[in-house]
Image 1 (cartoon, rainbow, N blue to C red):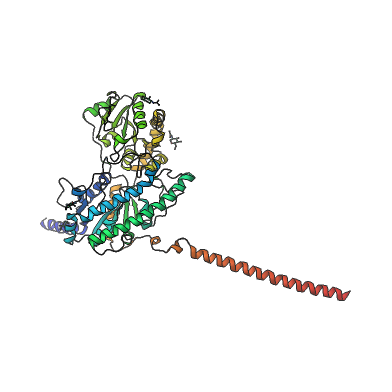
Image 2: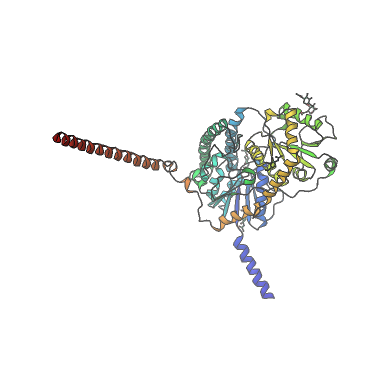
Length: 513
Ligand SMILES: *[C@@H]1O[C@H](CO)[C@@H](O)[C@H](O)[C@H]1NC(C)=O
Ligand SMILES: *[C@@H]1O[C@H](CO)[C@@H](O)[C@H](O)[C@H]1NC(C)=O
Ligand SMILES: *[C@@H]1O[C@H](CO)[C@@H](O)[C@H](O)[C@H]1NC(C)=O
Ligand SMILES: *[C@@H]1O[C@H](CO)[C@@H](O)[C@H](O)[C@H]1NC(C)=O
Ligand SMILES: *[C@@H]1O[C@H](CO)[C@@H](O)[C@H](O)[C@H]1NC(C)=O
């Protein structure tokens, strides 16, 4: 018995040692919606016994013993509730510009941070570096310093400026462009729009990255071009799934892992509980997320919501800054914070009027609640298109919202048949061979198990002329030209022969005559 115990212990220690990885996670972006997703993944790595050093803006209150925070919080700017709603076309052009500007700012915050500097001086050894792939590449410079294989993570789809490094082809005819509408069925104008935006965004990113390279050189010393480090990212875990976004175009080292951030729902409590349970016709939940200042929403939207509240039999739960709004307390429950998951999971919740944020869409799909999506900024236009195309909901644009259109759109998704379709979609969403979280962890550990293999898509290395088949085109042209020349020569020879023969004939005939 004793021997068995010893063997078991030795085995356990050996085995544990074998799988325990020393991991650094570099998350320079300060948006909480991203960290909500990433935190679940990090916690699962912890739960499996890995040693984690997390560089982020969100230090844990009481981290477990194998979790080390390197906090950027001291100098991070507030991102929540800070953006203004602007309903103009220029906004769309500014989106990519601003996102990359925020990226460079968070690069500075990351690299200049005293805690990060101290970490670099310690020269730690890591088995893996997990680096957020969003709007800055400075994390890659840091990962390079740590000399660890890199796993990229993204809390949404792939940003348009990152396509090239992973060898993802962009085609305006059927690949949605995150910042504008049209989804997979763009009109000719939308295709024109996204082809321009795609070029413009790449252009901005190119210069943004050059500026970051200077920052990296200043704080980290000599580091190869960031784009080259990026091409060596082993795997990218993206937060999407084809059930919601449709068939995709990714190479094998991009793994879709969407869905794991949604927690088990708890029962709603207090006033909210009695409000929901008292709703004989069900509940419609309204929330526009945490990025945009709700007070900056235009009046037509606010009046249309107020109208819908009085005109429809359902009760409404509204995440809104103005609790003193004079409205029938029997019809609407207003609060500036609400337990979204618990509300969506409640059987009385029939619809979700949302800004089309990815996390909210995934949560609604998880609990099969139809969405009315009103995209405001960022990736919301393409999310809203996915919501509509997948059948999870319908979308409405800000300028289209009036008293009548809002009620009509809500009625459309309240249709029991629509809901039945959403339930079917939700069943497909949950139907996977391995859960999203296990998939993410599996592929993360896979990289650590095979750190010397490289999975980069060959397309990132081949020269321009080969990608566009210019050399092959030249060969085709040469073959065709040769063929045409030969044909011409043959024809000429044929003609000469004929002429000679004709002459002989006529000569013969004239002799006979
Ligand atoms: C875990 O990470 C911390 C912080 O980087 C480090 O001090 C410690 O040595 C690591 N432990 C193991 C077992 O790698
Ligand atoms: C935050 O910024 C201030 C001023 O630039 C600097 O003195 C301080 O060291 C920074 N904090 C950290 C943790 O790097
Ligand atoms: C929209 O509804 C609000 C509230 O019911 C009402 O005050 C307003 O006059 C309506 N607007 C239009 C254009 O019908
Ligand atoms: C809140 O709503 C009330 C009543 O509709 C209005 O008078 C007030 O100006 C609003 N306050 C804000 C901050 O929007
Ligand atoms: C539900 O799905 C079926 C089959 O995909 C479709 O024909 C029907 O129109 C959908 N119903 C609604 C209300 O969208």
